[in-house]
Image (cartoon, rainbow, N blue to C red; front, top):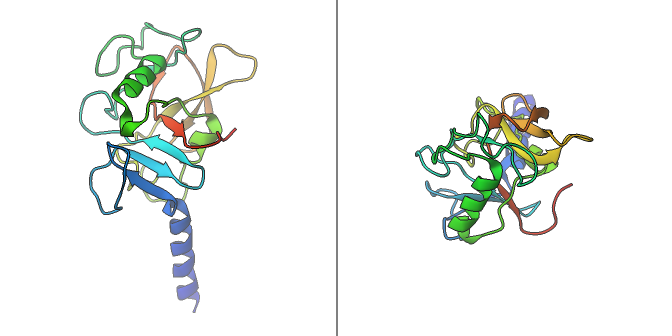
Length: 190
């Protein structure tokens, strides 16, 4: 009886982690979970669409990194803003513009996630090296990802979410790290 209860609990926990995740095609259409190619994920409960990174070098290459820049603060052409597929001006603003020009999954309103939005993807119950549901978010790096949330009273430091141990850390906008964009289908999570 205890084994059955434990197995049911494991199924319940793993179901909670991925039950509301749906695969979205490049054209913005929902596709079957069995499909092996998808470009975005819809998290139904929060009505958030998430970008999916690729293993192929190019715009959405999983190993591209970016400095944090919003047009007013951060690093547009700093020492670390050359680690992406176009090699110059690898910053968050440039990346968001390029993804929106591409109309990823037929949407043109992609943005950096807030700290609380990005934390919703952290999966402490999986068995992967990264704390994310790798079945839906392959190619996620075991490192930090930028958010749009600045550290209180600072114009130079922004929160990141590390998918290697969870929580959040603060990093100077000068340095580079990874990005996963989001778009709201409804209200934003604060």
